[in-house]
Length: 250
Image (cartoon, rainbow, N blue to C red; front, side, top):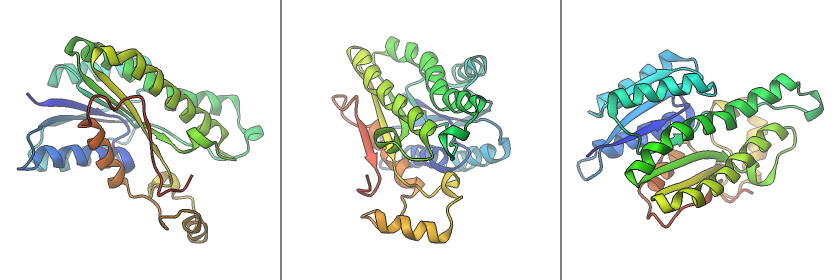
């Protein structure tokens, strides 16, 4: 039986890398696990369709849905589409997220509400609709894409840090709640990954950052993708963990 993987925020960056990593594993001749892949993004249908095409070119079944899943009804609509195409959800990767950089006192209440809704609300929505399938199957994997700032906090990213701290706590709590049902819940706390979210950094900023990171570089999106696939295939006793991917930075 093929497993169905749902990946949010998959039009670019880490989400795209996760989707392609699952597709490449499914297409591998040495692999005994096959996946149906369902990808989502909030707005950029063109980029998402390109991701879907790359996955289908590998011979892997893929469907897509464009919509802001921080909205409860939109998330419900997306999971209706997942069920229509593939049936139950086996693996959920909550990657959708945004960042707002600036002084906390300059942040508006609308900005605060927006980042909380996208970074935490979307995780609630997707878990809410995926977990019943997993409970019925007595198995499942939830992988939340978090950040080192959820562990340590970052100046000028207070709200972002707060959202990722919430995701980390939710990961640990859900793992305890769902372990009796055979469901594993883990998070990847990413450090500085070379994605559009960090494109605001100048070359000088990047060089300074590399000096702080023992690995001497930013992480690659494909490294996060490979780790997500590893977590999906990890022993069921590995649950409730916040796994840091940061080159020994924090």
